[in-house]
Length: 309
Image (cartoon, rainbow, N blue to C red; front, side):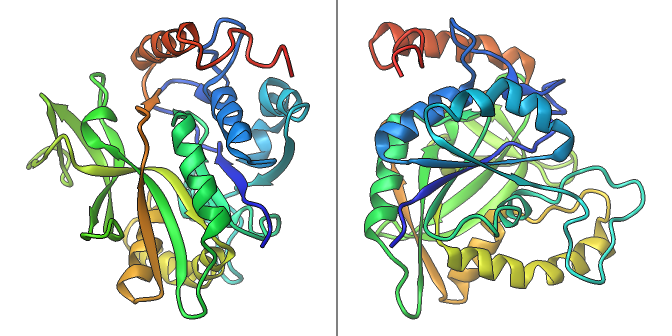
């Protein structure tokens, strides 16, 4: 079995943040959130990273991230483009929004040829999360009649922001910690120690306990997932183009939920002792900077992350 590789989804436009948050420093020496993820991934065992970006951000991304990280890990690039559609489909006029996280994975379909972990470029996951996902991928191949996936689960209360709403994959698992369903909620807000979500622009709200397990898009997948996602993409497009042509998104958790419901896959929900941190809005950045500084002072990271590499 090929060694697991890391796929980093970095094509997001950062619209709520007000700029390219993937290249905004959070460390003392210009380190970005992705620097800490790559550092943690390397010490977990990952040797290759595939960055999924857009062509128009290529030069800026390589200058700020890729060229530097290529000195410490093997770097590949895949490009998520609106026009990357099955034959016979066209991008709706005026659509600028990407096709979603599952489409981002499909962008890497010609590069990834074995087990892989998926992360967001602008989320801090912690070293333990990369360790457990690498170990799982290294030791759990697909079965003849079933895909073997995994995800690292986080407590919802630890992943919401005081500064606005977020999107999270809300999970339900069985008694053996295998995922039963994961539902993408695109508008979740903090509500004291709990949270709440709306599906009708705030007209009605549903409460979610703070200890609800959610996906932060740290998945462990196999090439079987890519084949299934590609096969199912036209059906998604048929529905999206009819119902929501400008904003419909092909969500990674939705495809996994469908495969689980059909009995074609199962996904182990792994636990990490680490706390998630992320930057969705500009007001979130000082919190992440303070968390990184605290972890650095405690010895989890060197102050100048790559100086000794």
